[in-house]
Image 1 (tube, rainbow, N blue to C red):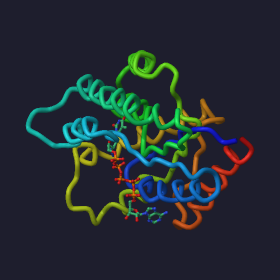
Image 2: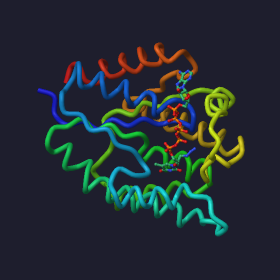
Image 3: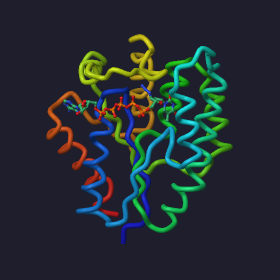
Length: 210
Ligand code: Z5A
């Protein structure tokens, strides 16, 4: 009997996470379990969505890295207790567009925040919650940038330079190397239907037997 599972999607902007989450959701509903909840970070609850607006909005006042880090964790604390944990307890598959690995990659890798600080906050906010499976969609920066070049509005993160995203990407890949059981790298530099196939294979490998 399959019980609640927590699946996260990660990767740099434009890699195709939002597109892929629909594949994950419908595959889980059709082949694994009927009860699926799709969510995202930053966000996922009304309050956390308000924090999201603050985090993404470009303003004249520069947000410090510490303030940014704490806001991500504040939203996550709300998201976990209001949505993620209750749903997992009821046996749902919870599928989130980004979670803790984004903090290590963006705030740690990109901004240079001390990883021990992130780890301390992780242990305070969710000592017992880790994704069961993380799908890290990976593609070169120029491929992702091309996929986004029709977008007119750029949020606070999307205004960062290439070297920031290179550091984020490397940091994600490093985490995947450190936790190969949980974090599966999906080659996102292929046509959407091939990305979908790779994702479905990872889901089958991870959950078909459980
Ligand atoms: N952030 C952080 O710093 N720390 C944290 O702890 C967390 C987040 C949780 C908001 O995230 C920002 O918050 C994010 C990191 C930071 N900023 N950045 N950068 P978000 O998830 O809301 O925003 P995003 O990552 O920028 O998402 P995105 O720009 O929408 O990218 P995406 O979801 O990966 O891509 P997509 O919308 O699915 O696809 C983009 C386009 O490519 C679209 O037209 C698709 O049709 C197309 N596409 C998708 N796949 C393919 C393939 N395979 N081939 C061709 N075209 C494709």
